[in-house]
Image (cartoon, rainbow, N blue to C red):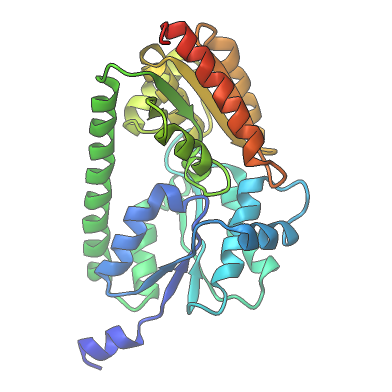
Length: 313
């Protein structure tokens, strides 16, 4: 089979626009593209996806995971395989939430008719990210060398994009403007049914939004463990705590966004509220029942408080 025929025979990979997608979007999409494989991303969260996810989940599941199942269902029949990786940890005391451990099994049992594509990242069991992507590439028909080259190229691109975002945020911080620090997991911040309305609200104001997780992960880890605890367990929590520590004195207020009922966030948010007591703070816990009008009213009050403190008419 020649190269053109091989590319034609390559499967189409579906990627749910939820959870880890918002951290690994650039890496995943570039990796598949480098191997000549088409990736199809589910659309932004809409009412149909919310309804599907809620109907496929138990009541106690966190809203973000419910949305993930809705995005998976949206992709069924529109691709050959749906990418659901298992990411457990990326280092010592760099664990990911348990929902990421069991996501593949949850998805497989919820949608037994779906063909899933999985790879596993578990540093503590010597399953590094690079090894996971090599295995993934081989599964999709590439050689180990081709898969390694595809991964290195995608990783370099993703790292460059992350650095550019950090630099762009530093430029925002240098502006003489009102600023709010958004403390939220990326899969909540940028989801259309959770954080996007909040971003849209501030886009229509003179406020700049600073993202706590737009920070070098190694620097965040160092700051968080020095300021809070040397034994921080959750990787994503460490990123956010490091961002709070780095940016808290350079903003006018802090907004905490969580999806109900996230266990780690319930502890993390309380820690931030008790530790940072010299800034206006707004905590928003979102689920499928929340109305955007109610959230906007709270945002307007929050902005009024900051505006008054800054002495702006």
